[in-house]
Image (cartoon, rainbow, N blue to C red; front, side, top):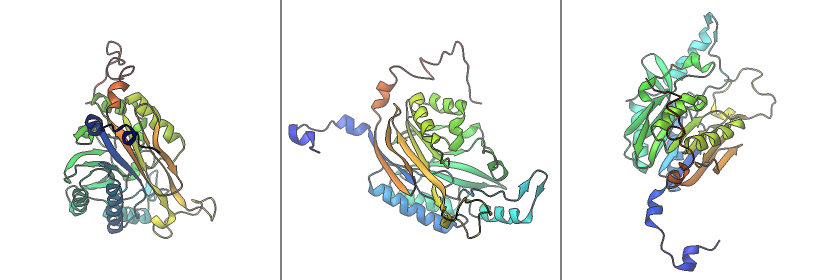
Length: 317
C-alpha cells in the first residue's frame, strides 16, 4: 500500500502520535503445577510482545498459577477427599505471594522490557488463594492488584472472594487501565464502577472460550466508550500433568484443546481491531488512538449525561 505521507510530503501529526498506544494481547497457557516453567513462558512471551513495540501487554486469567479446568478437587457437598487435598496442595505451591520471590521475578522481567503489563495470577495470601490480576509499570512497580470478586461455580471451592478495596482504575503512561477478570464482565455494577473511574483501557483476562464472549467484549466497549483488551488462554493436554483429566473430559481421542482461545481487541465503537483468535496460541497487536475517546462521548456517557442520577443511585462501598 502506498504511504500517503510519502506522496504528499506531509509530516506526521505529533499530537496523534502522542495519543497512540501500541498494545498486545497474549493468547497462551502456563504449565499447571510447574511455576518455574510458567515463569519461563511468561518471560519469553513478554519479550515477543515487547519486540513488536507494545507499550501494554495483557496476559490471560490465571496465567501464573494456572487454571485447573475440569478438576473437582474431590469436593462434594459435605465431603472432601484425600486426592483432592493433595491436588490443592500442588496448586497452592504453584501460586505466588505478593511480595515474594516469584513476584520479584515477574517484576524484573517487566522492568527488563520497559512495558506495562496486566497478568492474571493465582495469589496465595495466608491459607487462601485468590484469582487476581496485576498491573505493573515499565519499572516493574505494582500499580494495581485486583482480586476477583466472585469466583464462578466450582471456582468457589479453590478461590476466595475479593472486596471493594481494589475496585480501581489506575493511571499509567499507557492510559487509565481497569481490570475485569472473566465473568466480572457480566456484573453490570462492577463495570459501572470502572466506568465511573474513567477507564480508557478495559483489560479482561479470561478463560471463557465461548463464541458469545466476543459479543460481550464488543458490547462493553460500546457501553463504556473504552478500548477492550481480552486475553484468553490457549491450553492443550500437554500444558497439564499426565493423567490430570478425568475419564470422559474429552469427547474423542482427537481432542487436544482444553481452552481454545478467543482473545480480541475492540475499539470504543465495538469494532474489532484484532481477533477473535481461536484454535492456537497467538499474539494480537493493535494501535489504540486514545483520541477516539473524546468523540465517542458525543452521544453516550453511561456515568455522565446518560446516567439519570435523578432516577438511579450507585455507589461502591
